[in-house]
Length: 291
Image 1: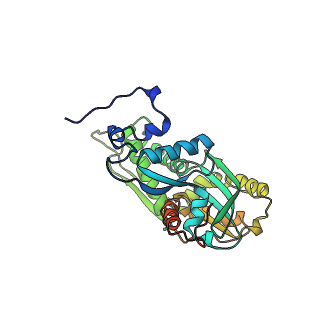
Image 2: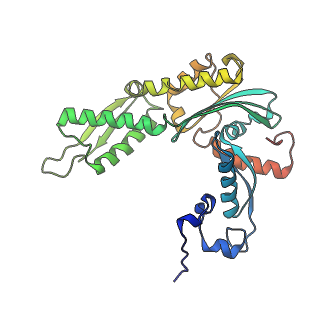
Image 3: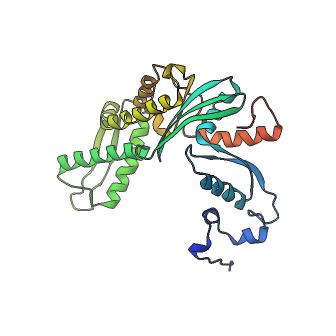
């Protein structure tokens, strides 16, 4: 039988809660006993307090990592695009993912970065877009079949998965079919949900969510002391930025400038923490000066 470790909630620091493992005590520095810690860098949200940064570092060390640097996510995104190798670039990072909407204005060049204005808005996220589709499907099914699925948890889970899948498909096609057999509770007359969703309808359902990002973008630009025409590059981060309506809205916010699209927006933040430590170890000043 394996060993068991117990602890009280008040004994755990947030960083230790990330990895409470008996092996940590055996290994001394955390991670696997006898194994040298790996060097690395963490990325973090653009807006994070000092104690949260320290907790992130501590969690990395507990996991056996030799944490060299904490990189905020907007800077990580710019690094992934290679924008840090340019001179005096002013970059806007538009991040619409699963948790928050963030807009940051950065100055990068020769590997150095300075954040002019990070803003985080924990309201409009990819899950909110999905919910709009779910609500529409619920209303359509009730109108057609007279059945309200809101109290059926299994049906709601299937609708959630179908809504996300349809939203993703509509980034590359103009219409998709949502087909969920036996969506209602098992009865002799179980009902099927078969509904076509067009890109135009999705855009209509979520137009106000996209519009709500315009205010924070305008505020961030004003606070940075720049004009939208002075932004050299626009970086899109988060799966929701694949949506054509989002891309078009971002272009309008920045005077018609095309966003930079060289890296997968779902992976862009994760690329830089791999890139930065390798460069740091190589001591390459031209591509990896200190941020």
